[in-house]
Image (cartoon, rainbow over all chains, first blue to last red; front, side, top):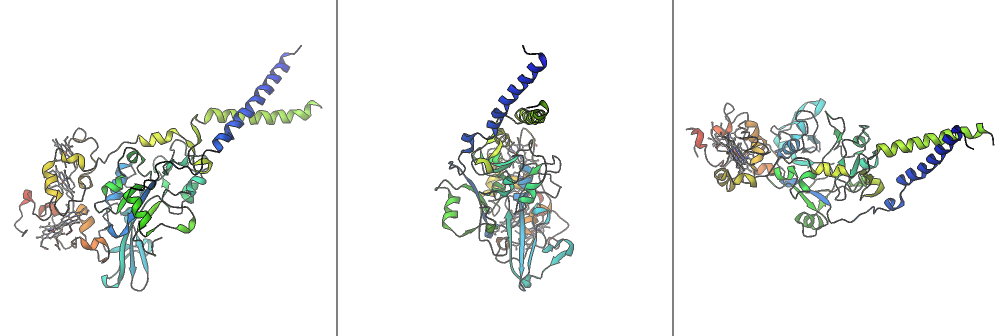
Length: 261
Length: 165
């Protein structure tokens, strides 16, 4: 005969013993482990920036902020435009006032603590604008460092953040070599460009692409050989940012210059 | 073996089991490895659909043509033809249902995004006629003299004798 105490003990052992391998299997399911790592789906979104065409109007930044409810007045933005002014004596001056939300309307270059710098037109060797956004890397370091699986890459290559799952540890913000991530001022979760996933998935273009009057920004599917963006990337001289980091960025730049980092 | 030897082991097992049970309860069913594998695809699948549901605000210029054909005809062959209506009037949302009208930005800030002169010769900015916002009629809004939907014309609304064209 079994007394009650012994019965309870044995039941717990059996139940516990059953649950451990069951839940363990949940973690180490071999079939899921073999889920294709370098999946070849039909769609892989890429972005193309033509530096020659950008005039620095900042309509892309404005449209992105409104479309994606990025806090207007906070100093955060998912995409921004940088001004590069290279002087005749070899200095590189870079600025992006408010991320170029209101465009570039002054010749004075914002040098943070050094104040506003006015370069004489005859001293300027080159001046141009470089739009920046998340590179939706093939090897996204920001995703690797997430301890809870709150940020991830979709099959079509877009890196997203699960707002309900993010614990706000900030590893991804530090991990991104391009500085495209920030904290949402109200929700306190990591935020970043979604490549307007809601627009792309219904056949539209991203808000920044639609806003650009000069075609400096384009989005395309690199797995479609007929896509005009794919044709440019595969046949013309394009660059990526910080290639040496091995992140395999998927935002390509036409007409970029060596000063652009 | 004696009971006191086994007891810590049972406790450890109970803790492990407890953790695993809480984990199964807390982690959503659809949490798992996506198409990008363990390294990049570890996520809650339904979050993708949540992002896809995000409301679209900018509906592009094609929707405006239907009701504002006059403005479209004015702008389409003008030097401003490539600028989307929503850049100057804000996103469409559900206009004209909600909002009834759209924002009309008459500020100089809108125009000097492109027209403030910047001395960058090889940039596309150099191809846009530039003015010095401090010197070019700073007391008035640009549209007092220029018609935004076709800047080669003066604004019919505000016939200004100063404008020659």
